[in-house]
Amino acid sequence: MSLRSLRTVVGEWRPTRFLPGDPLQAVLAAWPTIVGENVAAHSAPLELSGDALVVATRSSAWSQQLQFLSEDILQALSVLPEARPVARLVFRSGGLRRVRERAAPAATLRRPGPGISLPAEPAADQWEALDRLRRRVASLRRHAPAVCTVCGAPLDEAAREACAPCAEGTRHERLLTAERVLFMAPWLDYEQTAEQVARLEPAEYERARSALLQRWWLMLQRARRAGKLSKSGIERKVASSYVLLQSRLRPDRVTPAVVANLLGDDLQAMLWGQSAPSAKNSTR
Image 1 (tube, rainbow, N blue to C red):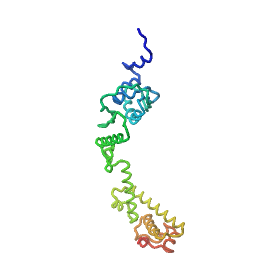
Image 2: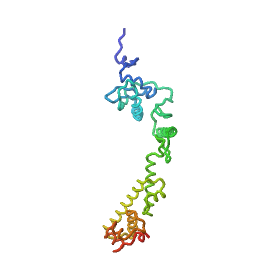
Image 3: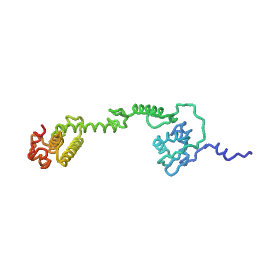
């Protein structure tokens, strides 16, 4: 009987049966099913270290490719009956024996979800990666429960109408429109403003109102500290709008006493002299 070197024996060894109850063996057995045969030829679970599964990959590109799919891999591992709970994946590039490349170029790394797949080979350059991203987004749109009515991005809930960025942008536009309406007619209440601003919520009305009051008051305080008005005299218009919005009174119900109470005697005197006019007259 001829002796063989330990290196040769170890290099030729392949597991023929898995030990029952061994968590790592259970992961090894399921690995090709989880990531696909092609990807399994470029990666392999090495060990379970605490709550982490150490995976060897052929290169850093393969490590990055699998890193993007970590959540899906962890989800698949969680349902293996003999596998130990794994909370994270750790990738080690290199260390795998070179294997013969599969002839089938259409092999894919499957992810959960209908009609969604990623190429098994890493992208050659950024242009190919961008093209893959475009195709994947198109696939997500086709299979998503709903799409954003503004930008067309796929949504994970059929009840939603817009993605978070578009919803925030639409809300911001409503606030700006509400502020413009209240600047021109500060005596309008929520119901009257909502007639001018579609889908305006009560909380949005109050936010627009508070923003205007704060902005106008800061402008008036700067004029008071400077002891003079600007050349345009815009402070008088701002003061009248401030009084109407703060008091929630219509112009014909605002009296000089209301103006003095809200602005103070010194600011009132600087704006209109010793006697302040009614807001109805000052807005003309």
